Length: 447
Ligand SMILES: *[C@@H]1O[C@H](CO)[C@@H](O)[C@H](O)[C@H]1NC(C)=O
Ligand SMILES: *[C@@H]1O[C@H](CO)[C@@H](O)[C@H](O)[C@H]1NC(C)=O
Ligand SMILES: *[C@@H]1O[C@H](CO)[C@@H](O)[C@H](O)[C@H]1NC(C)=O
Ligand SMILES: *[C@@H]1O[C@H](CO)[C@@H](O)[C@H](O)[C@H]1NC(C)=O
Ligand SMILES: *[C@@H]1O[C@H](CO)[C@@H](O)[C@H](O)[C@H]1NC(C)=O
Image (cartoon, rainbow, N blue to C red):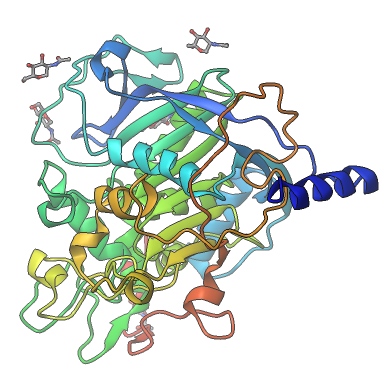
């Protein structure tokens, strides 16, 4: 009674003054409906998940809240602005309009855990053989798509809410053996993408390294045009594939809201796609993608707060500390050097709070679920202090179902703008020991 008194009074006062939380949309229940993957000819194909194939697959209940997301007036305008910036190095003023979109409410550990499970499951693929693609004629089930286990490339899962109003695209991360405890077919392409997106200059770690692009100009000099071209030229790199994927899914579910999630490389790609289309994103332990967004010439919206990054300080990949000749990343052939993320960040300081040492093994999504987000979380519960009523639940939800279990697991530090967490005076900059310039005749490498 004593404990509930302040809550009761609060509720009373809130009702009295009429300052209740704005009405939020009800939570949604998602189920796995499709898988997506890439053929060896860079086409995206889908398969429908038969429930029996995924007997262990769970449903995901995710609370929502209204997000204000800046979107360009049209995707064509966005593309035009990007092309202009790429070709002529000129920026075009884009007309951003702020849309109110129901997005995920990830204010508690339980909510993040739902997305973490979705991201985790993408590492496992069903061996379905019926793949189809999305063409202008509709969902083209007639074209058979050979699928070879040795093929690599982007893949993942597609979850749809039971009312078909909302779709979650989950994108698989890097499957290097030392990251998730089991290699996998897509290691080669993952490594190329990782090293292009998250290194300062084509993953040049030392003089003995072979790099993923030849933009190094000696010393700490790097040709700017060259690194940009390296990221935009090949059509099977993951960012352009991600754009197709988003377009294909919105073709399949034309009226749905699309959210995106992923772990590691999958998280960074989720963010780049989410910033492109103005879609809500929840990313886990993602290597920092702000530098890549610039090199890809993404027109930068007035705010990227619809992207939420979750990571912890003992993960050298998310922290951009996995580089240097003797690091475990270098041994695996990766150079992860970027430190600045887009959007907002929930960063758990596991190094000082839990005494973890910096170790690439803490990067895995399973590790994060087991030790931070799941029911056996080591992250300390905050001191029991009276909560404003409705904090744990879905604020403003009329509560039709009084027996609905309240969310019980923990509060996390609130998300903060990435620049505040990772930078100084709100500004974070990458690769400051490098000099980028037009060392070459840029017109030669331009398309
Ligand atoms: C893709 O796989 C098919 C089937 O094995 C093969 O015939 C074809 O040559 C491959 N294409 C490319 C571009 O590798
Ligand atoms: C779907 O993706 C393919 C690439 O696999 C792309 O060529 C096609 O234009 C996309 N279709 C739609 C409707 O977005
Ligand atoms: C998947 O492959 C395994 C072994 O190759 C097989 O036993 C299983 O029946 C397959 N599952 C499906 C759904 O085809
Ligand atoms: C959602 O879409 C699926 C597949 O297209 C359909 O079978 C189902 O009836 C739809 N459900 C609702 C509530 O519209
Ligand atoms: C760059 O190369 C092109 C031909 O490859 C040449 O026409 C042009 O003059 C060069 N520009 C500079 C600044 O050297």
